Image (cartoon, rainbow, N blue to C red; front, side):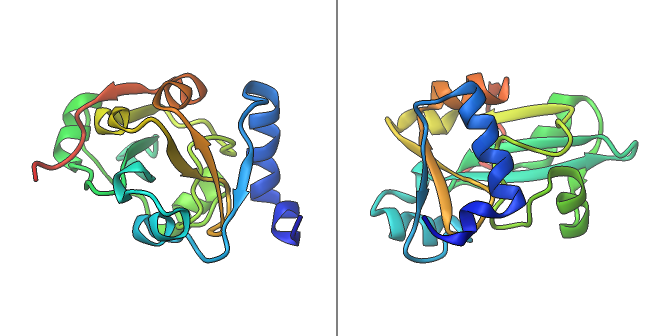
Length: 163
């Protein structure tokens, strides 16, 4: 096991998974998974099976987590309508302060502060296995769509831009 497994952000994900989903293991990739495309190449899977974690915020500094398929893009307008308040992408420093993760390694679980709402793109349900960041650009965990719903207590919805 490499030293990245001892990073604070990775330990938070490991602790969360150990507590709520002992069957899920963290996978170390040989190359970076900083982007969905990179992760799909490393895992030899479709880009759509990669979970992108996007952190948004509203004017009251409430944070929202949007999880979408790696081949899709979040619609800020749809997300705003779903939470009934205008929201925008959080800055890299806000993401780090809110979640404990740097962009490129934002996990859906193990955040420093629980997001107000978690919205999950229903397109992820098309895949039998999906892969999400585990707190570091070289680490992911494999799950099912239902695992992701349960672990995040997320709301399945349409939050992506039309293709």
